[in-house]
Length: 453
Image (tube, rainbow, N blue to C red; front, side, top):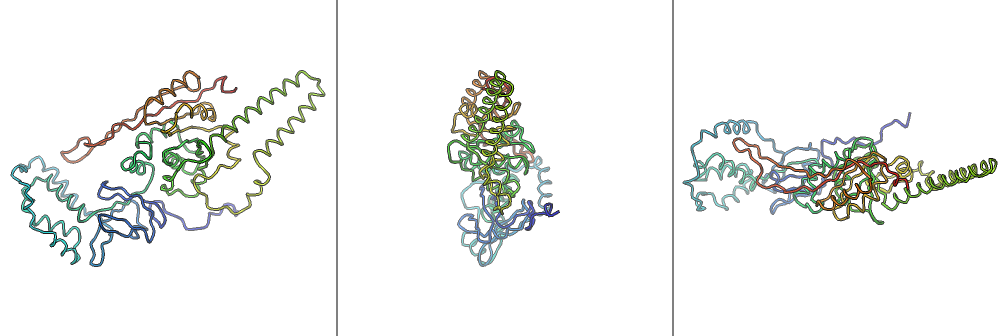
């Protein structure tokens, strides 16, 4: 009964932050996105001031914080928007059509505001909050009442972002991480947009208990998305060219537990292909032995067959499960980390059963040179999906797959995304949007006679 006992240690609520977890901080409604690891000494710089992130520990994801200017030093305080303000905005939205004011008589000569910078500094020294400073600016503006309601909301929001910035505590997962990197550092993730990432997972049929082969050259974003969807089931093989794995620093932001981290393994393409070639050579040798046995005497064939089977089974066990690794099951293992080297038991399972799907996100490599080596590692009828920033490499790969008859159901897709602003009487597409999210080549591995040779 001791095997069924839960692991010792405090249980972690994934909906609430804890010390040491990674968070995504959304400052002023998307104006700035920052990844941070919460600890007692971690800080965040907004403008020319630094704030401690300790108040964020133990708060649920989705909490909103606002900068408060205390008498000693500014700090982050939990902010809950009042419900009355939302009701007033909704009622105001219904009255927008009856408004007759406009901004034609307003002249921007920098003389409408009577509150000076020295006055604002004096209010801060006295301990005035950011909202009080905003209300004072509105009260001392000579043109605020003359503006339309649209202009008043823009003015209030502009001053609130300057004197009372707000920080939204977001949980880092596939969508939020992809959106943050695409907005800030798109080249690091190969310009992979969030809709392309979701389509990549769907085309590869990533589901629970799947064995997914991934070649990720976009910082570990795809590996993290696959591991997140598997949810601690199946396995993710992070493969790579050469002897050194690719950087996957993004996966550390997902806050994966030990069970999910144990499912993320790494193995080079050379090792996987060597295992595959070893399997084909053993099959061909076995067929040659059977042919020789059919042409020899019955007694000789029986002795040779018994000897060959004994040798092959002995060599197979020694190659796949060495004696020095059989005794490691009783040792105390360290806390697993995502991306550890795949054990020989896992490689043996992949060799016998094949991978259930393949995902390639390598914008810097030729797609066809990767597919012709990785596609034979899949089981038959397994789906695959390949992402690239440009169309031509995938078109060439698609043509070669058709000529070699290695896959069926080939489809070349371009995801398309348009974000809309939804506000009362102001619903329209956003003014700035990305032109392209890349291209995806998908298909299903097919059986052919050349695949056995």
